[in-house]
Image 1 (cartoon, rainbow, N blue to C red):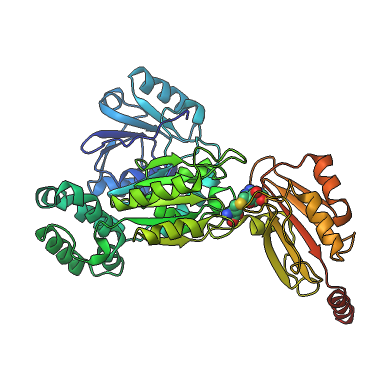
Image 2: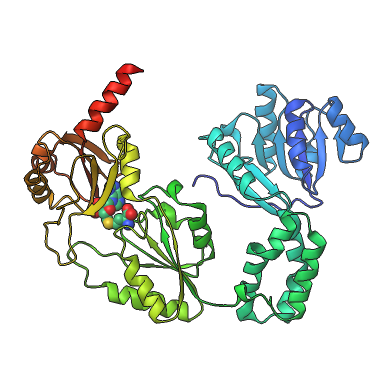
Length: 467
Ligand code: SAH
C-alpha cells in the first residue's frame, strides 16, 4: 500500500479549494457532504460555486492564492485549470505543511480522493492508487447494489442507541443483538420504509435485555460453505455473508487466501488442511471434533471448503458429527471444480448432440486404492469428470478402454482452474496417461473424458445440416 486509507474529521475545519471553475465545483460537491468550512480561493467563481456562497455553504476568498486561508486549512484541493498555477500553488501549500490534492496530477498529490459509497454514517471508500479508476467504479456499483439506500438511517439510529444497548444488554449478548439489528427484522423493516416500526422494535428489544425472537438466540451453527474453485469472485453472496458473521473459520488447503479476506476481521481462522498422504495432524475425526466443540460454545462456525462442500468434500461426515451432537448445520453451495474447469476450458459437459449425462467421479477411493470402479458409469453419451484423477490416470484409461470407450474419445485436463499458472491440456483417451506424464500434470486438476454418443452426434450433425 503506497497510500493508507483513513477518515479525516473535517467538522468545522477549513478546507481550501483553489480554483473557481468546473473542477473546483466537482470537489465542492464532494465536500458538501461533510461539515467542513469550505473556502473557495479564486479571483472569480462560476455560477454553481457563487450559488453555494450565496446560500452560505461556502465562502469566497477573492485571490489567485491566499496564504492566510491556506495556512488555516486542514487540507487543500488545487484545481485552477492551469497546470503551471496548480504546481505553484501546490508547492506553496506544501511549504505550509498542508496535505494537498491536485486535480489530474497524481505525482503532486499527498491525498487521493477515493470513490465513495455514501450511506452516511456508513461510508465506504474505494481506491486503486490511481491504477484502475474504472475498476474502482465497478466496485462502487456493486456496493451500491449491496447496501440499500436507507441503510445509513439504520446505522445512525444504531449509533444513537449504542449507549442504551451498553447499559441494558449484557456484554455477551451484544454482538448477537447487533447481528439481529443488521441481519434480521430491523434491517428488513428499514429497507422497506417501516422506520418507525423498526425503531419501536429495537427499543423494545433493548428494554427486554435482548431480542426475543428465537432465531437470534446465541445458538451455535455450523455452516459448511463452498468457497468455489479458487478465485474469491466465484463465492456466493450467501457464503460471503456467512464469512462476515463467523466467529471462527476452519479452512482447507485449496481455499484461496482472497476468500479469507472476505471474512470478519476478528474471526478466528484455523487451517485444517489435509495434504495428500499426511492427514495425520488434522484427521477427519479431529476436524469433526473441533467444529462441533466450537458450535457448542455458541459460536458461528464456518467450515470453508474448496468448490462445493457436497462434492468430494466429506460434508456427510461433518454433518453427521453435528447431528450426533445436536448442533445445527447447513450447507452453502459453491461452484464445484468440475464446472469451473469446464467453463475455463470451454468444454460442454452436457451437450444435446453428443453427451447427455455428466458423471462426477473420483480417482481416489476411501481405502486409498487407486483404481476407481467406473464400471457402468462409462458409456456412450457420458462426460466423466474425474476429481483427484491425476495419480490414477493410467488405471482410468485402461478401465475405460476395457469397457469399450474409443481410443479417440476426447480428453481435457484442467490443472489449477481459476488460479494463476493454470493449464488446459487436450488429448485422446488412448494417450491419457502419457499426456499426464509428459506434461507433468500436478494436483489439483480435473480430468474430463467425453464419450460421445455416435447416434446422437450423427443426429445432431444431420439437424445442423438441415437447418
Ligand atoms: N469439493 C471440491 C472438491 C474437493 S476434492 C469441489 O467441489 O470442487 C479435490 C479435487 O478437486 C482436486 O484433486 C481436483 O481434482 C479438484 N479441484 C479442486 N480445485 C481445483 C482447481 N482449482 N482446478 C482443478 N481441479 C480442482
